[in-house]
Image (cartoon, rainbow, N blue to C red; front, side, top):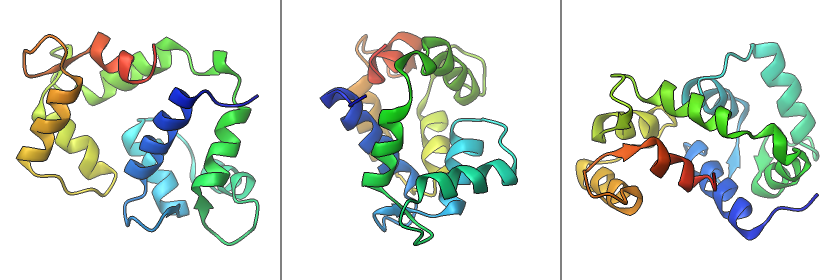
Length: 147
C-alpha cells in the first residue's frame, strides 16, 4: 500500500522531529525517544531493538527516511485510528486543559531533542491554531494528521 502525498508529508515531518541530531537518519536512541517520550507508548527496549532491526534494511544501524517511509506504507490505514491520535494528544496535554499551550508544545520538541525558542513555538501554534485562541485544541491537532 502506498502513501498519499499528505501521509508522506506528515511522516516526513514526524521523522524530522524525531531526528534529534539532524543527521537525516534515526538512531535506535532517537527511535526509542520517539516511541516512549513523544508518542507516550510503553515499548520495551527489546521491542525497540526488534523494531529498529526490522526497519533498518541495510543494517547500517541507522533508519533512513526512505526506510522509515517504506515501513509506514506497510501499516494498514485502520491501524492509525483517530483514537491513537487522541491518546497522543491527551499525553501531550499535561495540564488536562484539553488544549496544547506553548509550554506543552515546547516540551514535545525538547523530548525529541529539538531546542525551540518562544518565537518558534508561537509560529507553530499560529500555523495550527484555526480558531485563534493561541492554543491547539483536539480538532486542530487531529487535522494536522488528516483526521
